[in-house]
Image (cartoon, rainbow, N blue to C red; front, side, top):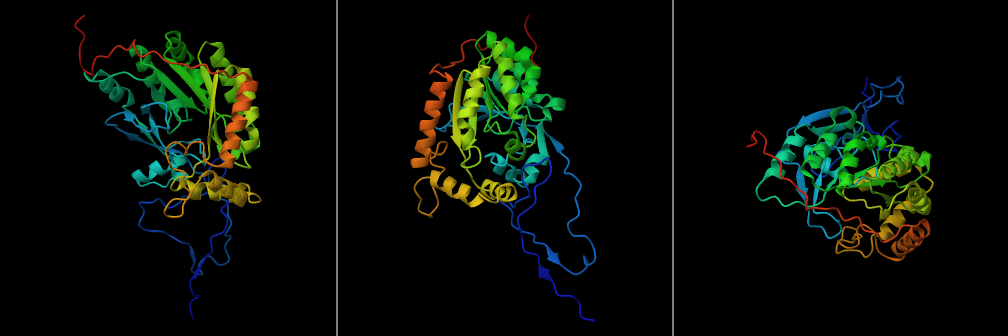
Length: 373
């Protein structure tokens, strides 16, 4: 009897994974091997589309050498940031931080939202950096890459510990989140706000609950984020909204609605970014598009490419260029900018700046150092 020849299984559109954003684990750019399924004949007679068990979130502990990261990007209004976690359970398919998981040997796909890393010594590491003789205070942003209030923060409370240290040292901070869990820390945020040391931004790309459930499945629902803006604003904490990202044909129709709702809830400032697809994010987002919006996937990708502006020497859209990568280039980018400007005026957002105070900083005692008094 001749054995059945091996046949490669063609890759079709991946099916959505319940409760997750990415639909698969894509190969990362440092990976040397790729695996492809084959039919060896042994599966004959068995069900091939069985439902797999849900992916569970795992958290690995890490001892961070330092917590502060610095940047000199002209596109970012801060020069230092804190991210207590690597990976993010929110599962946003467009997240530009996904490619960083490749440095851990993990996939930027499902691994990014299921295989997380907690910097368990975050507070001690930050204390050491703030106590350094040459440290000069400047507004630090928490959540520039991964969300500091993602679900695992309920148990680990690393973000709360960092905020407590910043409150103790009177250090200015901006927090960016998609999660209403931030309400838990109203006591610390209120204390910081009373000394003009904190600003909180909520990222809300859409008010459409159905779209949000697939786009950012484990983030707080849009209405809860709006409610959190209201509660923080009523407590005297300056809040803002980021419509990020604006995704053509998916969330772009929500731009004005998000700004109006956030303004009514008490947000005092607003911003936006357009969709960028760096490195592996392009494949992750494309697979998500074909799984959830197959009827418009190609239109979305074509418009995103248009927003990239002029092609570079490799024939690619230069969407990574400083000065334009956050807002895009060309006629569609100009249209989004005009819509945003008009919507912010109508919603009542002014040109008020929330400059935080860096003059109150009190260096902490280094770990293990005893006070003289």
